[in-house]
Length: 509
Figure 1: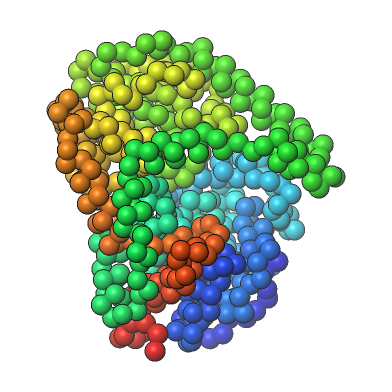
Figure 2: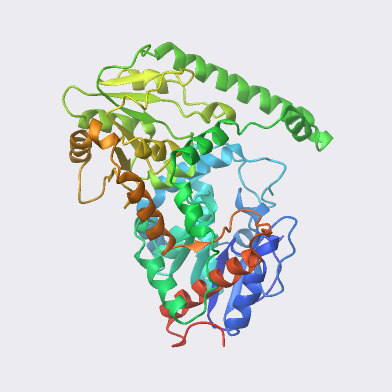
């Protein structure tokens, strides 16, 4: 349960959305409290990690999934109609994000102690849960006079998606870090989701702090490490890791039997999930119409069902079927679209809906390929169409195959990529990719140099480190953890002061 405390006047406060909740990174909260002594720090409690004495816990992570916030009932909170109007354009995305809640572990989250309907993922349930979250986060932001929100990652869960929408509607500055392949251990810095791929904000903050001597320098190995991350071997290795994301028999058995009283429920849930996945796979294989790929085609490999890429980065597409129909209608004459299931979909046992594959196969110009087929579909493709990012797109770039990027992506600036933005169209991007596809393009000797330039530009605009995994000290880098703690702290302070104008200088005194 959240700790009870009363608001202290109308001073400034920063809400830290899971920032510094990793045990090894909790000193970030301490450093922020030391540099900003007059600013209250608010945050989320986490299982198994003591809450920092410098952090006021407004909720616990166990309450987030089902909105089990006692304040909602005790204070009879409600959604301000004017606020609802401002976030209404985000409502569809947030309701889709609530799909993730259907896969939560009922034994690792709190249920509301007040009268509330059992969550069953119906539209009514999702809508009611959304309203409860909107009312709660709006109350937090107003009650504790939050003047800024800083998140450890892109808002990709339901609860932090609602928090982001409410903060945006209330015009509260929002900063988030983002770690994404291929540049793992690099933190992008953004204020808005729509900024993704624009490195200017991170570059400006980092340059300013570097000039003032407030940043711990990068490791000597970082430049070479990031350059290696752009290679084809790294791309294929990442794909193999994704395919192997299956727990061992021992791990699965341990999950099922502990705690023992939940064993019957977990067995039933596991069997139902496996049966639904089997049915979905059977329907997919019935509509596979590619033994040999068509002569001229663009390739699209689907993202895993219900992940952050589909829900956040692909916000303009209500469903993968809509995206595929849109692509098919935009194809150059004489070209087909070859669609293949994600190689990671089966391991996660997240089946597609009842008629998904039949709907795809009926779209003119769309061919469905089996995900079990060993044919090298990528090698003969006219281009790869990608939503957001996957390691397959990095492999395509290395092979000289054009990559058309849909949705929000950090791939701007990468060689041989064609992001579709507000200032371009998919049809134009497909035509440009088609024109660039040539044998000479595959043998482009400048490709490696261009990839290295892209890595160098990204390095100058990102911080070295990770916030969403457990960082262990590296023997070859004695400053590894200190670098993350200091540099993230300094960026947050510099950004916060630039937004609030509460002080005119950066950094610790």
